[in-house]
Image 1 (tube, rainbow, N blue to C red):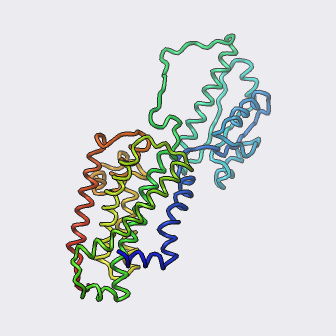
Image 2: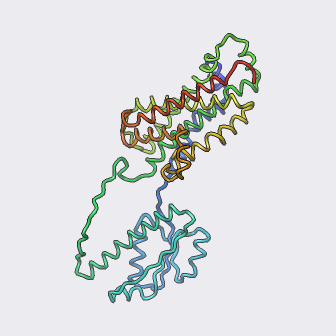
Image 3: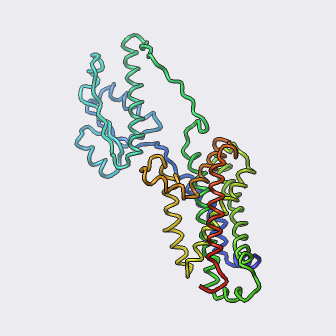
Length: 365
């Protein structure tokens, strides 16, 4: 253990990777990883140029969901803006729009949207529909003397756990889990491999160290580093991004220790099947980390995945830790709620650590 810590101290680049990089990555990803759709670039095609058309345009300008990039007079100009990506949507106001509104007729407003990013486009179209519906109700109210017919059904909405619907509060706990996975797995994967490359594994082989002593001495320093990273990234998440922490800190640290058992065990397993540090890095990235990111529910909801692939997600430890982290952060729940995920995470960690221990040997590979 002392040797491992000395190696970390003597390599400033490695120190930067394990201490500074998680904080910087969480800071950058915390701003970048958001599914909120705001400031949608909007092109306005105003073929009427009346007071009524300018009033409709002002409704979109006043909304923080839209940003008008230009106002043109013909629909033939829409294609160029959408093709270049200068606008995501185009609002087309027909000729004589103001006259139709004044006469009490029903004008048709056309909205043209770029469907390349279907999720963002659906959200933006939803914003536009709500805005136009509210504007239409105001026009009807003005026409009948300031009163609108009462709807038969009203909805009183209450949002629990994330009342402001901030996607960042949902994404940042996931980023914390992802960073711990990447850092600790890569470090432990290269622990034994580095000894092979430097030739120092031969010196360890002639010592009276037992197999479990060698593995413990290799992994405990990285477990300590992992817990330091947990403290650092949690401080950034809570105090910089102001993600609500409604659960128990003690329970969060305990679950983080269980999670580190899985990540360090996975890294140790990779080190037993790799001959070089480069090979260990490539194996970890392509065969373990990438599938875990896509199949854990971090980016894509598991419920939206095809039925034949959903059972494979139960083999992903990140899936369970994401449920635990988000439950502690946003819902404030305890072990009585997510004990199935905690048990699955513990079993996964013990299994991969046991497999790695069996595969490891004091013999040279």
